[in-house]
Length: 249
Image (cartoon, rainbow, N blue to C red; front, side, top):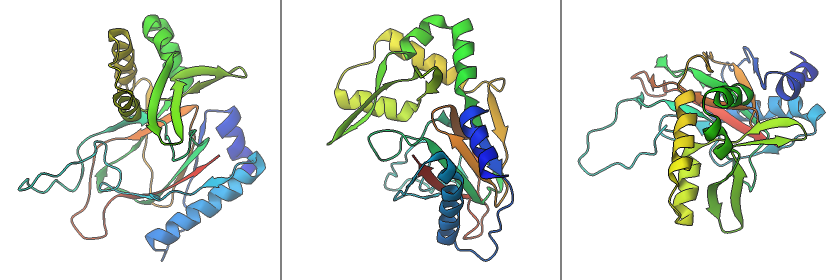
C-alpha cells in the first residue's frame, strides 16, 4: 500500500491501516523492532511525523500485561499469556502529550487469542450521544492522565480540534492521574467512565482484528482506541506472543 494511501486512511479515513506480510525471516526481536521503525519512518515522512523511540518497544505478556502484576512471595506462577482483556485505549506515550501515531508489528502471534481490538472515537461518541448524553457531557471535561515532574497531563476524553473529533481515553492512566492529585472521583465522573468502559466491551462498537506474523497495524492515536483479547502463549521458550511498538508524532 503506498504511503499516500496509508496516510489517507490514517488522517482522513477510518483512522487505521494494516500492512500485511512484512518479511521477518531470520530477524531477531530487536531487528523486528528496527524494521518496524524503518517502515513507520517511511510512511510518516509524507505526513511530517517523526519517530518517538521508547524504552519498552517489545511487548509481551510480561512487559505489557492488561493489569500490572505484583507477584507475592509463595504465589503460584501465572499461566503463560494473559487471562485479562486489554480494553481499547489510547497510548499515552512518554512525553507531555500523546503520540499521534501508534504502530504495532506482530513479531509472533499468541498460540490462542490475542486478537487486536479497535474502537472508533466517532462511533463511541455517537452511541454515547444517543444512549448516555449525560455521560458524554462529563467526558468533555478535563481528566488527569498521570502526572510527572515537568508536566501535568490534563485533557478531556472527547474534544473537537479544528472540526475533527479527538478521543483520549486510557482508564488506567486516568485512575493513576486521579490518585496522584488526591481528589476522589465524583459520582457523575465515575458513572461516565463506567459508561465508556461498558461500550468498549460491546462487539457492535469494537472491531476484532487478528494479526499474523509480519502484519503491521498503524493507528491514529487520537481517533481510534486499540486493545486486545485475552491470550495464551505456547509452552516452548521463545514462543510467547510478541509485538514491536513504535510511536510517531
